[in-house]
Length: 571
Image (cartoon, rainbow, N blue to C red):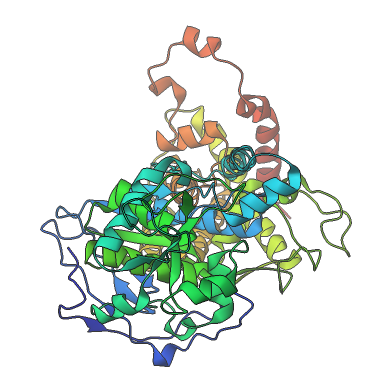
């Protein structure tokens, strides 16, 4: 368990990844002036699992990952989900696809059992305003866009979270959370709506940042240089808040709403401070506590870099005050996504929704009326080719690069299938290794080690893809050499290399459709003849004809033509 702020702590400083900050206030991050207190979790009895290192936004440095779980096997992870008032855009795609890859690395490569929570903000100033514009209830609007968001995530092969808590389903837990903050002296009611029959104040409730600091905590752990930014603080309070009136009721301008007294026509729930609704930041703190926090903090918290301040810093303050502990051990942020070098904005006419990108909607950009559809596999590879916490530019060049890499993998699997197909029919095919097979086997082992090392080094997916491409090149070179020399292909060594590539693409990067399902099944059983699989002729005949079976004659012709072209000719 992490220690309280009064315990001995470690101060660490390092350069932040090169990306801009979140809002129009243009607050500059100052790496050299950072001194956030962070306590390294104690190594569990189980040893803490694989040697994973994570870039921790709390320290602005790469640090060893140590889970809270005493066995070292289970970890908890929470990622800020969407505010469902409109269609999910490419910024959402970048964040949730890359955290999906992070989750897969934690499970598949690092070997952890991951409890992954993604929330849905279904009551918020933006939702209320948009529902009024459309003449529908806030609930109806939220459910509509939540369903659309989930469809988009499914299209991108983003795994469902362990739990998907909605804010409106956790109102009692949010109220109880705020009550504890008030009882502990970290929040206060402004009394704007007078007193109730028992002389209790009614109105909005604010987090007391001065009391928090006076108790020995640090406010603004993630972006201390942004603390006091009026523009960012106003952004965090929401567009329906009367900033001038609220300022007069706060003890300190930095204080922020944890419970908002509802105005007429707004969604509201009963509370000790009168009818109201949650503030933006409190929802995540309360839902974390109700699902995976349980008074002891969580392992990893994720979100987009634009949420660092005020949302994540305010969330940390609430949660630290609630539990009296280090409520988050590791904070991970995805970098900004730009569109052709510019910030995505409807005013710039470069705002692209996920659905538009997948469907190729014409007119997305002013100078490109015919935007081709982007395959989900292409989009995932595109994001995999960029470090999760680095800036990402959604541009023609980036898409072209992703398509080139995707084509390389697709052609590789077709080549492997064509090369092994003749051997597969012969259960007595030659299996003897020569130096060529030994070299390919060594290349496969080296690539596997390289992929693992890179993924455990702060989820370095670009490095992992590069290592996979190296193995593809080595396998293609082996096939070329055997074909040119007229030597037999040794199937098991080729199958092992191809399977190694397919498993990382499928299980870690979440790109499952670059190789056919039939080929992947065959690779994982060693690409031996079907006669050794135990399947009798009648059951084989009864199987539904697959795509691979339809393509088999074509692949055989290609393989024969390739071998004929490469065969040395007598002069």
